Length: 196
Image (cartoon, rainbow, N blue to C red; front, side, top):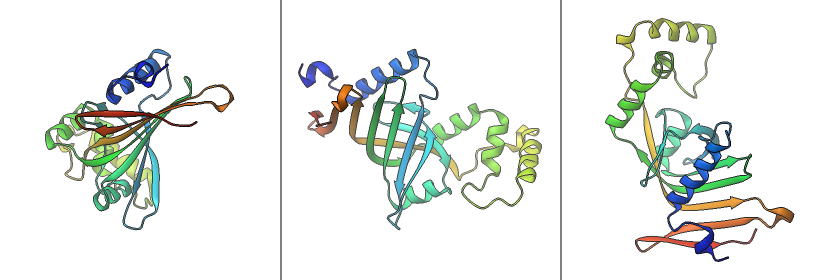
């Protein structure tokens, strides 16, 4: 079977197919993805974040711009994402350039969240030392009880990763896995099968 028959021509369509199949099998946290960043110190850092949207332009997530990942993305806008879906034994690896989303999109998503989540984002000094967790939790509860205080801070918002590479990996018997890489070519994408 040729690559063209196995995989869709557009990697976003292929991702949508696999993502929907993962949703159909009642997957646990299908939107969870590992985000890896590297700042000026050249030490990779990875953590799980949640994909909130994906479009033909890229993959969108939200965070505190002052967090470690936010600082690293300011220093170096190159990053990678990794989705691992154990039920179907698949992974999708994506590399690309990251930039901030529009203020409008960040406002819309922030305002769609539950009040306690918004209050937590407003008060959190993400990635900084926290001396008193009870005090922080009490402050979040207090602020959440006053919706007029809960507006999106300018240090919190969305990022979009615009892909420059996709790799789709499917487990097979005897480690004879299927691996396909998409890279930009002209106005489309080139598909290359890799050794397992």
